[in-house]
Image (cartoon, rainbow, N blue to C red; front, top):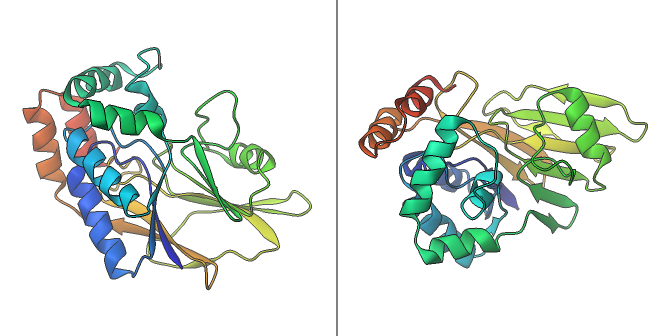
Length: 246
């Protein structure tokens, strides 16, 4: 089975459609959405409708912190993120809100665990930015493979039976074997708001037959997404981040 893993779409329909089309060319059998479908971007309804349609066809979807913030205005965010979230709440209808509220925080699929942030349950929404964060995350789970987003930065970490951690910087398009004598944590990168200086969309593909993970970068019309954001009256700084991939 070839599993496409997509996170941090952030109401960016153009980036989502580009990644889904790319995944189709890679013969993806299953889609797994790792949260944060709304926030920042200008097309929350279009994105949620597409996720709902894919979920109805068997895709797996878990909730992210921005998805939960739709119903919880106590979620702490940056000023621009709070502005975008207030706008998003005014755009979403009851069906989209109910769908986001219904999503689980984690989904176990055999030896695989899908979450938006870390498997650690407290404090919530931990960022896995450094090796020590990855070590704590893997120690908090018994899954052979953990997949997440949240940082918007692609990364790969493995831990041996003796607790030794190895970390890799994924090279786009280059498959990486995930041997079973280690447990693995993959951060898939962001579909809709890159933060590593490359504005292209990011996602990852797991091949369960070969036990390989491949990270991809997918070009899309960043300028059109930024223009839509400005036309919606959202903070110009969010459009600038899209263009720069920061």
